[in-house]
Image 1 (cartoon, rainbow, N blue to C red):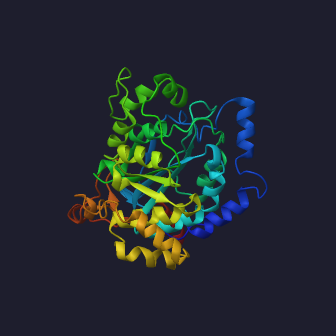
Image 2: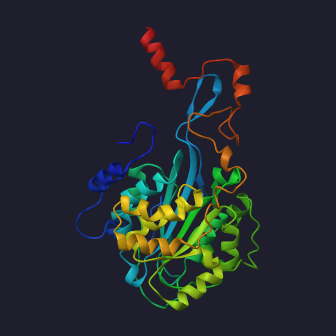
Image 3: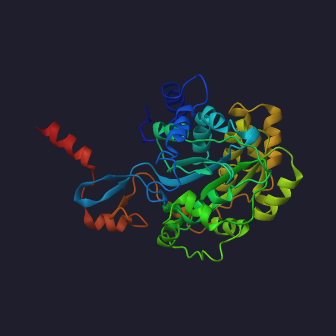
Length: 377
């Protein structure tokens, strides 16, 4: 069950995994069989499903007089796209096994925020399934379900892979409250290989559906289908709304050179192995948010069950990232918090104390209002 703030805990994720994931065989076995039979992904993880645009929005409780209370806190989206080609083919099962730590550690370095996760996978354009892109979710049940519905093809093939279609979705088919108020979410690509540098229009339509360019425009972006952005240009646009990083598994010089050119040296981070994803991501987020200083990271990791050698290795990996980048943004100190009152759910900012004083009413949620009436009766 969730805690009293409406957020999840490590324990709720552990319980959900035990309840929903088979202990024998890949967690995605049923989804893989379904795709073989139908040729279609489940809508929850299909990039073309649910209107294409992935949204990260505040959670509200309706109050009396038509006002709205922010229930949990500032929503922070975190999107992961994980390589499932060749030797990386078991990464969905790895992602599920470390999910309690992923949520727990990242929540620790986002105090007062509502962590909203979308963990997807990618393969090659030669595969039957190139990309799985889920919704941003907050509940353990939904996040675990979405992971079990994904279909890794596990093929090796050529060295070059195709995460840039997932990057396209992140840059142009994401709508987040954080971006609307000038802040950023987090975006991580996990792989051991370089990518192609160019998109293909037919592949975009195959992955996202025939309405992909219409939906990109609806989301506020103008993409010329006759002059599609390069991978480097996509990441440039993604960095406007996300603190985006490439997490490199393994030491491959060709891979490192490619992604440094795409992201910049300060956003390519060594990931010793996929099982350590929660620790590396939490260190990056903590440093970016200003919750951790570089001198704090090693102790933070050790206190959360990372071994001494692993903690030191991760500190070396994250030392060059843009530390404090989120905290330096102009609206960082204005972030809404749990309990703030909004006049409308679509407003950018909560009502000020002066506005609330003018209204001069006791603001209670509908549920509380019902409880008061029941007690009185």
